[in-house]
Each structure stands twice: as structure tokens, then as C-alpha cells.
Image 1 (cartoon, helix red, strand yellow):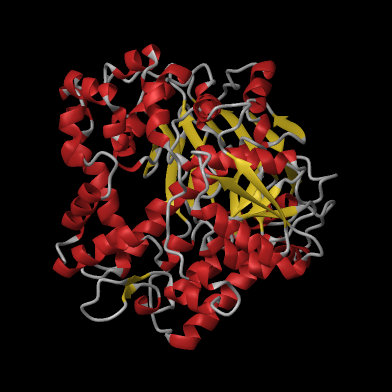
Image 2 (cartoon, rainbow, N blue to C red; image 1 turned 45 degrees about the horizontal axis):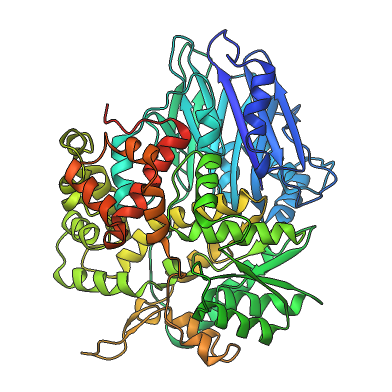
Length: 612
């Protein structure tokens, strides 16, 4: 995994940032790629790359330039790649059959050859987690693409001023350091953040005018004219649920898909470790992974309050059963308090945190890297694909019973499952902000579209589609950001195209549902529990889904006492609401967390929280 960046001027212009400034922008992402750095430029474009060396560590420097001489190759192609192409050996065989030659065994070179030869058609042949940019200098055309589930980030913007240029980068904070990028908050996305703690809304980000390439998205940019010509499409969407598999057939299908995905995700030329959360998902994966290694290391985070917690005990049980070298990581370090880590993360990333768990994930990743490991396997993605969030599932089952239509279902869902619900925004935000947020129409529309894309508001399965399209990219983005700050590549084998295809074939009743008619007992991830019942302890199989124990309310209360953060929040919050939260943040934890984040983000980046 790496960090990528590019600046492309339009028409006859050259990039506005001088060479030393370009390298400063690239090296702002040194945490994403501490092992190597490279750049390429011509009169109109510049590309930078920071490398975390995983595959063929001694080779594979980027940017990669492929020179074409045959029909269809289209001259030169300049490529920067970030992530892991899991089927690169299979693709390499196909490319060699068409005459391509390779100098390294690095998957990035395979990806570069694929887009050089096949163009956008290559994307549907890719399997893995990635963000890729490729540019053809002869026709001044840039393509930006992202993996199906949004594991790897990629942002872009068109600069302000007379000389327009397209700038893209792996991190929002890097774009904010470009002198021609305006630091103006996007009110619609900020309001969405207050409800969902997601830092994107569709392709919008927290900064007005800065866009994200959507999961499974493709952005084409022409730079030959005086202004960028931009077209955004999707090259991949989640498969529709067919639900034809039940019983043993469903179990076998999922078990085979997960096993094969794990095998692909374990490809590495450096050591791989496991992140044990104490839950079913990570335990399942590492049970499959352990026999492949003579020795294996696992890491788990201890609860943020420093006390004994069930997750820690369950993780220790699994580590003992697997016979791993197990490391427990305290989130509350004597060297750095959780609030100091929180500040440092926001400053480095250039955006507020999502869930409080990011603080624990970053502490865990630093321990992994401190042990000399670069790659970690985790269980993220199973809950969204297989139905694991019990509170949400109870809510959507109730909504689906009434079949209110997608828009009404979305509004009901957001009112009941938000940090600050759309209906309560007017109690917290100043009047000008309530108008600037456009009453969360974009948030409701995004939620409704995801539900409708999955089927209908009367089908509980449609809401898994919403979780997969909307919730999962946010979760994976937070995982990537927190781990890459410590130069660790986190790999989530459940978030894989073939696992999604398998899940779509499994009947809803095999995923989640009431245990009996009229019962109040809700079964979750049933097919996964059934598939691993014989290989995992009963205590792991029967554990309900639980959030990592993070005492975020007192941490938020501590930050909200900071005078600079209070001043930053004043343009956003209605005075009485602000006074109530500041007086007793512990009584308003769901409000205190996002508000403390926004205030801290404003202080650390200089982005004003004024509505205009």
C-alpha cells in the first residue's frame, strides 16, 4: 500500500507548484510509503509516489511508464498504483500471452501493464484493494479508479484561480496543502458527518469542491483544453441478491469463498500478522490462516478505559487455541494519551475521525509496525455482507414490515440510527447552517438510493445492500487511514468481490432473522456461525456483536474544554445547544463526539466552520 499524487495542468500550462513544492506534497504522505519515493513529469503533468514495499520489496519503483509500440497500446502510459492486486499472477499470464514483458514480480507493474494494454476494460478484471491513476501524455487523458469496496482512498479537485489544474491524492490532508485548494467546508457533507460520522457523502468530501472517487468508481479527465473535462462513472456495483442457496449448500459456498479470499489476501513477500478482536469474524479468518505458517503473530487492543474487557478475554482465548505469539496493546499508553493521539491523527489526516475505534486501531497498528510487521489481516466487512449488526437489523426488520417506500424508509432509518438525527439538527445548528445543509436531502437520497438498489423498502435484505454500499466504505476507509498512519497495510478478506458474489447467492434466512416465529431472539451471521461451529470455541461462536469498549465521552469532554475548539465551534452551533453540551458532555455523548471532532479539525487544519 502506498500514497499517490498528481498535478495536471490544462491547455498549454504547466503545474503551478514548483518541483520542491511538489515533493513536499508527496512527502506529506511519507507514512503511507516510508520505503521509497518516486516522481515523473513532463511539461503539463507531474506524478508522485510514496511506497510501502510489500510485493517484490527490492523493485517496483513508481511511477511506472509503459511504452507502447503495437496497435491498441496507445503510446506511453504513466501509472501510479496504491494497494494490492490479488490476482496479478493470473493477469500477468494473460498479459504475457498478448506480448507484454515484465521486469519485476511486483503487482503494481501488472496493474500498469493491464491499463496500458486494456484501458478501462482492465478494471473489471482486477481483484483486490486499490486506487490507480493512469495518464496518456499523447492525448492528455487521465483516469482515476478505485476498488469495489473503497478500501483504498483517492480524492481529487480542480483548483481555483485563473489557471485551472486537476490535483489528486490519496489523502485529503495532502490536497489541503496545495496552495490553490480552497479550505472551505462543504455544509452538506458536514451535516451528513454529524449524523453518520462518515467523512464523505457520495462523491462529496468535507471540503467544498474536493471529491472522492466512489468505491467501484472511475473518473476520466481530459486536460487538453483550458478547463478539465470530467466524467464520473461506476465500473462495479454490488451484485443483486438471488438467495438461491440454503442449508449446507449455503455454508459450503461461503466457506469456500472466504477460504479462497483469505488465501489471496495472504500473498506477501513480507511477514503477515493477524488482528484479533475477540469476535467471530477475525477468529474465523485466523483459524483458516494459522495452518499455513510455522509461526504466526496476533495483536489485540485492550479496552480504552484500561480495564479488563470481554473482547480482550475472547481474543486471548483464540490466541491460545491457535498457538500464536500474542501481543496485547494498551490504548491508554503512558507515552501518549488517547486525546493526544486523537489530535495527532486529525492533524495528519486533515479530516475528523469517524468512530472512536480509530484511536484504538492506530495504537494497534503502531504496535504492529513496532514489531517489524507491515501487513495485518482483519475481519472487517463480514457484518455488512452477512448481517451482523443486531441493533440495525432489528430496526430494519421493523421498517421493512411497513414497506414505507425508499425515501420514507431512509428517513426513518436515519432518525433512529444517527449520532445527531436530521430531525434534531435545528436544535443544535445555527439557523444559517440549517439552511446550508439543505435539510439533509442529499443524505436521505443517498440512503434511499442504496435501499432501492438492493430491492425494496419492504425487503430486509435491501438494507444489507445499503450497509454494503454506504456503511462498509466508511468503515474500510477508517481502517485504512488509521493503519496507514503507522505504515501498516490492513487487509480485509471479507471485503472481496468473490465473497460478495457468494453472499448474494445465500438466502436471507441463512444470514439473519428471528430464531422462531414470534420470537424476540435475532440470529445474525447464521451461515458464518454454522460454517465455523466445529472449529471455533462455543464462546466465540455465540458471542453477540459488540462495539470495542472506548470511553470516548470523557475524551470528548476533555477536548471540548479547549478554548480554541470552543471558538472554532461557535459559527456552527446554536448558543444554547453549545452551552448544554459544554456544561455536561457526558450526558450528550452522541453529540459530543462529532462536535469535538469538528472543532479539533477546524483548529488543526484552519478550515472555518462558518456556513458561507
